[in-house]
Amino acid sequence: MSEATDLPLWAAIAVAVFLLVGAALALIGAIGFLRLPTFYERIHAPTLGTSWGVGGVMVASMIFFSVTSGRPMMHEILIGIFVTVTTPATFLLLARAALHRDRVEKTKGVPEKHRADIVNND
Image 1 (spheres, helix red, strand yellow):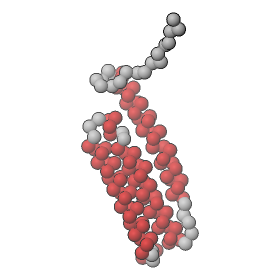
Image 2 (cartoon, rainbow, N blue to C red):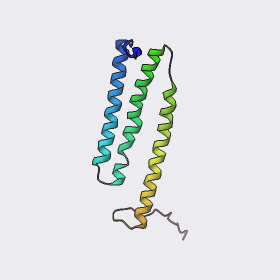
Image 3 (cartoon, rainbow, N blue to C red):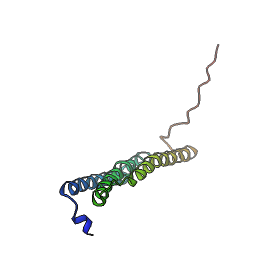
Image 4 (spheres, one colour):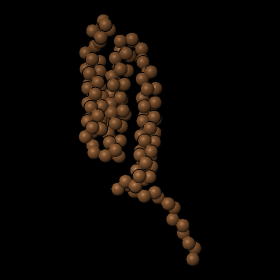
């Protein structure tokens, strides 16, 4: 791969920094996923890795391929948009399914379903 050896120093440093930051955030998210005790706490940890971790790797990829090809490469922005849109929706559905399951099984510590209070006009 001769393209990587032709990368200017400033671009190589930027790519390395963004890769390290993205990898570190993904690692922190994975450690949080393993260490947190309950499902509801664990569901927040992967969002760090999927949003900011992927973002760091995505920016590093954009810099690398833009510099080596000599033209702007913005394909990664679509990946970022899809990850940003789909991750919260997926975790919301997982949390709602787990909450429904825990309410049906009457697990302790699960909040009751909110019902709209009926206001009497007495």
